Length: 333
Image 1: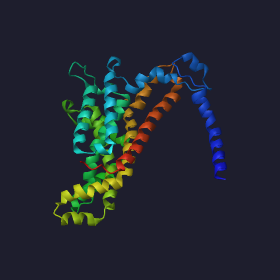
Image 2: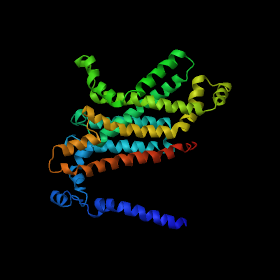
Image 3: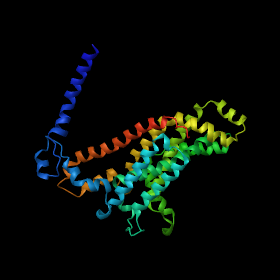
Image 4: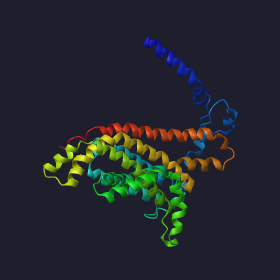
């Protein structure tokens, strides 16, 4: 009986998916042939638009001759993310290497040294910009979130009240409104010579927004740690900060790891909102690629599906990597 049910469900799924397979694979056009794509319209997908516009989709308006730099920066960031998910790389030394790698990726994108031409951030775009904004926002948000979570559990009334007000205020405001303030209103409050570049402002805004959500996740992890762990740590001679750092926080973060990974995935997807402040990440680069080309503009569905596939691959990789992070770190020596 279970086999019959499995067979019936398989047939039903195959019948439902057949039109998609027929459109997306069997009758699809894979080469950048505009006439073939027009002839296949309504019958098959035109994946040739990806082959035609892939450079703009991946790198936005970055200078064509210099696009090896964002490609190398993307490879560095992806390599660091892959290494960070391995238990054996969880040590203070790797944190320094990761910081240097991220700095190298930013310097490659910016240029202005060692014979590399300077490229302003307004020309950055595509996948490298999405990764830099997501990773930069996450790295800045996490320590702030830990401090906010500890402050909200503090016995000091003013410290606890300040953390609570920040968390509740930021969580009650849409991210899109904060990005508008950071991009357009905040510079008006500063002298022209003191106005920072828009990209750091956007990254700091995303970090501050994400920290409010991460703080509540970490606070939940702290509440899951038995109070006896903290008391026992004090009993063996550790100070309060040592007990919190070496005993309580590691257990709390392990308890909160699934929710933390979920929040990190949310940060990665929310990075698409920066296109409203003229920073062309993946979805913004898509509008550049097709917006000014009337010939290929009608094949926007295939382009959006390709962008969605990129987001899904990264989000799925993060969810799978969380299982690696849940494994205990191997003992040294």
